[in-house]
Image 1 (tube, rainbow, N blue to C red):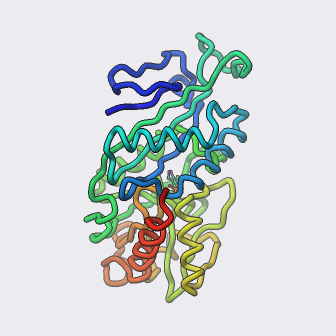
Image 2 (tube, rainbow, N blue to C red):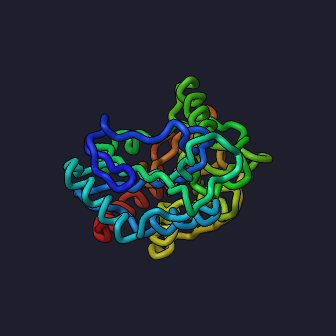
Length: 285
Ligand code: PMP
């Protein structure tokens, strides 16, 4: 694989960063994941805009323009011959050659930027989406700025492991009885024809897929309610699903051992998945 590090395209085993990098020492960095379908980028613009916001919330200066970032994404897709897959992008605050809680001077310390591709044939025509996901619920003990897409992913990663250990696929995070989001996706329930998902705030990541899916749902005259819902309400829902850049729209068929509806992917979730994939393929760049 060819990867991109601080302005250079290199074979992955020749790419290096400092051991003092604050991304490595302190999880002081942000990231984005953009999917690739038919060799084209899905919602590049949405990811670029959120990246800018994440950096600005952390007083980080972008080391690259949006135009150049698009160019790097396209070049990596081209050289690695990605037809379906993901592009991972990470920008950290870099390092001034030592460990210190105080941020280094941005005038003299450049951020570190890394991009690499992940080849994932079958991302769109996914067996997991046909089966639907089994979910466990766990307490949400993450920090209070979940709207910033930082690389602090230890707890979400632990959540995924707890789910695997329980024979399930993923976990939903619950705070004061209310579902915030999934470990790496936004969470939705469906009651009758109504799609319910938590309102935007600092409690959840403002999903790029969420924004697109809610727009398509409204355009298709589906009813959308942005409000908090409890895990108990979710277990009584007719359907549930998650959204993310890598999973698109993923039906949920079971929560904490309770089957939803018939225990198979719901019609609204499947319809939204189809609309999302159709529309985003058309708009891909
Ligand atoms: N919430 C969390 C916690 C996530 O990690 C992600 C995906 N990185 C999402 C939601 C979904 O966001 P997006 O649709 O932009 O991938």
